[in-house]
Length: 181
Image 1 (cartoon, one colour):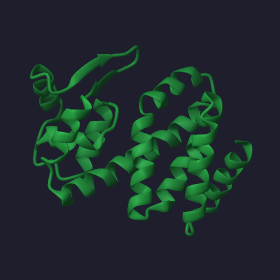
Image 2 (cartoon, rainbow, N blue to C red):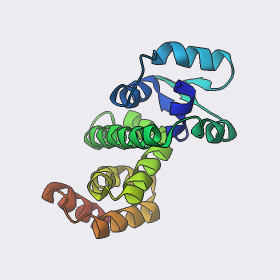
Image 3 (cartoon, rainbow, N blue to C red):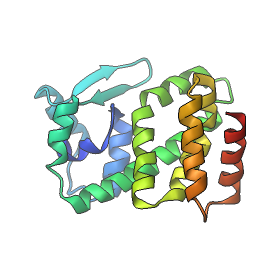
């Protein structure tokens, strides 16, 4: 069950991310930590030990296979929770990127960049432009510092064109970063 649900992640994930996404969706009593240990011992996922945290990842072909193991309704719910989690993640990162922890948070956001991109894609696919705008507005500093100017500007323009009911704060922040980029 967890194996199929992990297909919502791109590039890798942390235990915290998996627990947050799964706890909001129907979890059916599956213990995430135990399941991750079993999947790692079966070589279905790979464990990477970093400086601050342990990250997990799947080979892309295995991830594609695991996508088919989840019912479409549950998959939709998981993708929504995934986007909400990464919205909160980049909003926290945006604050930390302006302070003493910038280097650490640049690395953390870079490690989850594929997940952030997936959340932006999901927001476009399902019409959740307000979530997409909040994510893009919070990524401005990262895109600037890391030199992802074209990607950042394209994402900001896209969400600014689609977000009609966005909070004035997020809209102003996105416009500011679009101008900077």
